[in-house]
Image (cartoon, rainbow, N blue to C red; front, side, top):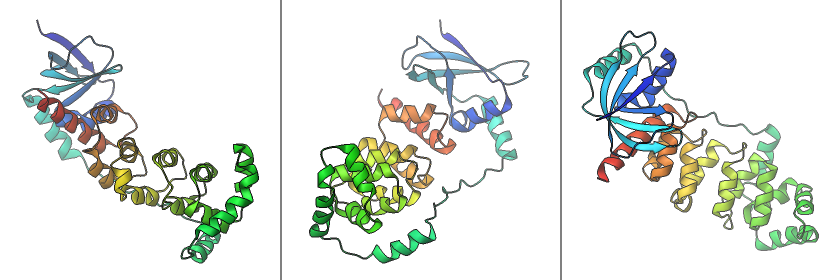
Length: 277
């Protein structure tokens, strides 16, 4: 006998969110713990707020999570098509704005103009590294030593310094330094991931990182690019196809991801699940 599942929506807002994220693409997420298998056929009853009767549908399990299951509705029912037409007719869908660009202070802008074209030699960096060498063995002392450097010295260090110095510069969170640090040939995946955890990372920084094949092709960094709220939506969508199955599932069920990104992730997940059988 086919398993019967019930999905109740407590409010119109909750239903609209699920519709935009999943239902309009014939997907459905049901929270809870279920003992179901992938590809298992189920019968679903969907209850809208204040509805007198449920909307029935047949579905297939396409993903099982600790927090719930993802379903694909088979032969999308007429009621779903009518709901989609009704919602589409009343919806004025806003164009998703790009994240606001963070502005540098006037002082930083002036200093940036002065140092933008300065070539940094290995000798310059060696002088700075000698200056902080006494503190090299102790990270807390090294942190303080780097903090005491002038802005010019920090920029030189950001451009050519070693990984230990880069990590500390990231911790210190100067947005102006990030643009130089990203160009550092010693920058590794570890520091890039550290950057993505820092609130000072800007949209411009992310776009520059995304243009670097070494970072865009790194599985974990690509995932961070996709889910970061400051990543422009077109960039995130263009990288989505390279995200692995587990990451796609995490995006599809997240409550903190943009609706269009969630929707595309679910469609891609369903497509991959279908082609696997």
